[in-house]
Image (cartoon, rainbow, N blue to C red):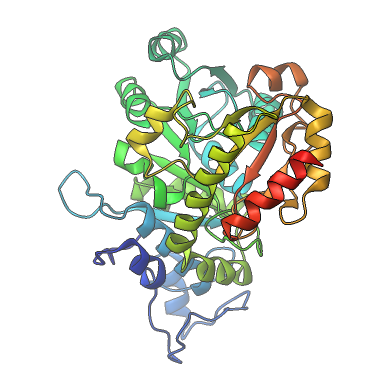
Length: 408
């Protein structure tokens, strides 16, 4: 938790937020490559273990390098927001070894056998597999419906008293489906549900789910927050400080999905340029989407910055702009998509997203290969769909590369 929320600018917070001076006065918080920490006395050891005194014990429980990343991201998610008393919103963050570790800790700290989770179509493939293949073994059931139809959502909640948690991912991967966080959170709260959101695609630069009274936010920090493809990571942020310090922290520690100092150091350095990078990512993505939409070889484009996207108005309501990721399908389907990807010279054929260079992937054969085809098609992830995470290269080079690949 932090109260260092006194900067007027988002970019300033990216650089200075969460940082505290350390004993040797290093300009940047160093990599604390230590598994354990010493105590001045037996009495101090007891006090720290009982959390009567602040201090570090063991790096699975906490580490100075990791703490700075946690503090900074909590500040960014709460930037400019206020709590119920009108004071700056206080949030607690826990850094994990991956986005899936953060999501697992979130679900396992909030659900028990017999509970149900309600969620929507077109989730990240790993999340979809977790709720399909792991949660059922724990007697936790997922109900998947279209979150655009609020009346149907409420009807489903009323008919399933075991629903305890609503899980949102917006924008969703890879169809860029966007759902109304304000309306859904209000609906969830009306029925006493815990409401959670995956904010990986948007980052707090574009949207802040806590603005809509959402309880928990998760990120794969591997993506835009790190921004350079140098480290895997995930983070779980919550507004209920007592719960975050209690069962959530205990679940995090005992599952063992903690981050490490080196990855945390890389993440913190990446965060320092988040605002600048996102501005360029999004500007480039808008221009690439407009070009693709005008090209006769492209069947359709999914990008929230285009008025043709069915969720464009929802995105305008809760996002600063259309974001940095798009997907599209060529008119000749799978074969044309494969040929296009193979012909690219500037863009990189790779999974993941959110790095400085433009990454292009084929979800049906990569990120969603573990999702049954019928379910994948139901979610709008067709055989020939191509996902593009637009980087920060010069836009002329990107458009030239896309054009030559389309006509090759």
